Amino acid sequence: MAQTSPPLTLGIEEEFLLVDRETRAVASEPPPELFAALHDRTDGRAFPEFLRSQVEVATPICRIVAEARTALVELRRILIEESARHGLAPIAAGTHPFSLSSRQKRTDKERYVALLEEMQGVARRMMICGMHVHVGIDDDELRIDLMNQARYFLPHLLALSCSSPFWEGERTGLMAFRLMVFNGIPRTGLPEPFASYSEFRRHMDTLIETGVIADTSRIWWDLRPSARYPTLETRVMDSCTTLEDSVCLAALNLSLMRRLWRLRCDNQRWRPYPTLLIGENRWRAMRYSFDAGLLDLGRQRIVPFAELIEEIVELVKEDATELGCLDDVQRVRDIPTRGTSAHRQVHVYEQALGAGASPQEALEAVVDWLVAETARV
Image (cartoon, rainbow, N blue to C red; front, side):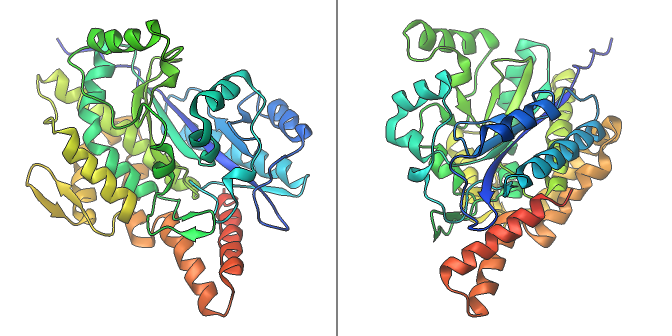
């Protein structure tokens, strides 16, 4: 008898920074009226994050990828419209090109006050934005099993989402500098493999009972069982500047989870690999995006990323078809062709310098591109 498919519903969270349209700098203290309007127009699906200059939007629970796209379009449109009323604009990027994190103000919320008290200087650098994809999986053991298997693909998803090549006015040489900042806090990075859900809970309960964390929402791995929902939450990706990139990466994420579930149904699984080796691919994705390829851990050699993408698309083709999102998944091929947001930001920057702009003017040109591309919904 065939196993019943998990719900595999989809939810997407996107984080944005608000910038001043005149100065292009991060708006350190946007007016409360903006957040009140966002709350009302989105039914509470847009809200401030750790910084006052950050906005997070969250789709409702979606049954299909097309629903998620419709929700993201509407959420971005409302955010753009309401921000414009105050001379502001949102940018979807892992980092801002030049504003200083030390100049930003924190949201006055008990959770964030406690976070700042615990993390101190590390938390004060958290002017970063990511995209989180929730896949509905209502079985605890299945969530842990899929987390163990899906760890392998996290560097691939990161490489396709890179949008943080600049930090506080510096071209960092990395394509996803956001994770360098995020890695500074504890309980981040690749999740450990667990033999069972009960083993996972034992570790979490130790941290909770000893007072180290209040709950599992303080576990910030690249992939984690959500503390609030019966979902597996992928958190490794930078915020995608281009909305279609958000959609196609969410579709790929969803299709991978279904493919790994089918392997489990056939008493098979994706081969486990050491965290050390997956971590090396994670670093390569942070540093180069897809430009230098990734380690194929089965073949034990570096493989061009375009080849890896073709293999992954073929791997999930049946599942993406069943989920009704094959076109979305196949659009991941477009990202290496035209470049991630990080590639395009660097191109804008270098083009501006070549035209005689100062480094600051070139960074401002990058912000202008981010504003325009974020608004292309």
